[in-house]
Length: 171
View 1: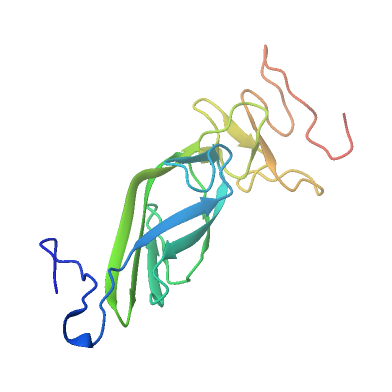
View 2: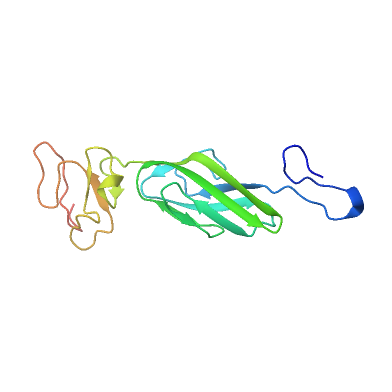
């Protein structure tokens, strides 16, 4: 039997197969603020999250979209948000019992990094800052990440800026 909403509903008529409604949601771990079931997952760029579906056991194929132009068909993907912004996350799943999807607008909120925070590229830093020793302007060996800064380069410091010498082991 079908209910007015169009979802499959359990039936006992005829003693045959019993259809069950499909359900799907998801959780994310790796959020700086918010727990796995929170309405919004927040953190600083780059933000790496582990997504997991929560749904009917009969669902076997998944397609995730992360809101940044990328997607995955893994059941429980790991995804890194490189740049600050708000991102919609969606998952669609299907199996022998049908298909179902779940979308959460603005689920991921990635913040820009303030001065002194680690970075990989300029776009991860707050307005007016750039990434010293990041991928775009590498420093000497030993730096695994850059730092968001203003008025500093690997070899100079603007008047009025507070800079650190960009060499490993120097303090």
